[in-house]
Length: 272
Ligand SMILES: Nc1ncnc2c1ncn2[C@@H]1O[C@H](COP(=O)(O)OP(=O)(O)O)[C@@H](O)[C@H]1O
Ligand SMILES: [Mg+2]
Image (cartoon, helix red, strand yellow):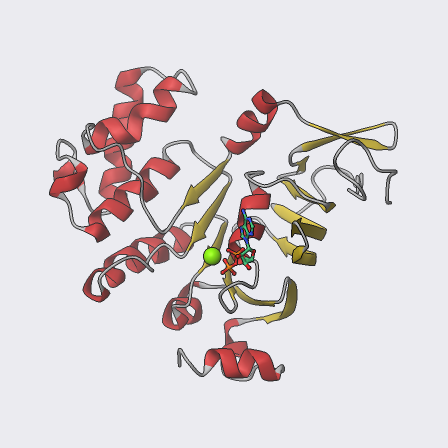
């Protein structure tokens, strides 16, 4: 169902299937341009609860832009994204779509964890303070409770001994694992990773991937943009290839060995 254009969101779709039938993330026809540059040209993607999807594709194919649309760091020019049954960024009303207010967008974002290439920890806060900041400040959790959860998360990412360390005292790999713990502290329903190991020295990549593999094994729903083919093979339920703002092909990790598309094949050659 395509609705008439509302202010600033021409062509944005407002489908209305029953809640509960929806996957954890459902993208339909997502379009996005920056000026004359059409970056997303109709992305369709579904991610089931508990599923781990690795998103690959050449630089500039729109992977980061798509992830940013999922938590509404970017507005869209068309299509729709649902996370856990909720239309992200917009509200459908009488066949029209309207922008959500910033406060409502912020509320939606709490359920979606994001880990970037650069970890952006607060440098003047300890590891523990970094992790409890949002649960206490945003979710109004009791500090003692948030700290207890933070310690559990630190154990989960293998950094129990670093609670009182400052970010600068940690390696890049350790900082990224703190960033993962910080995202998990909000108990997100969906985790987005955008090239989480690309800025790391090669010898530190493995520890971050191992942490992510553990999370994948624990049933967290994850969308991971990465060129790490070994990670995709071991941890992904599905691999999706993007190119030029569309999904070129997708399938089980075995697809990595037999891509149907020539462009996927030549892209993978660089990493296999
Ligand atoms: N805020 C922006 N303004 C203008 N162009 C942008 C912006 N963000 C991304 N782009 C452009 O959109 C295209 C896709 O970028 P991106 O989503 O970062 O791709 P990927 O993550 O696959 O490398 C690139 O050509 C990039 O330069
Ligand atoms: Mg990117």
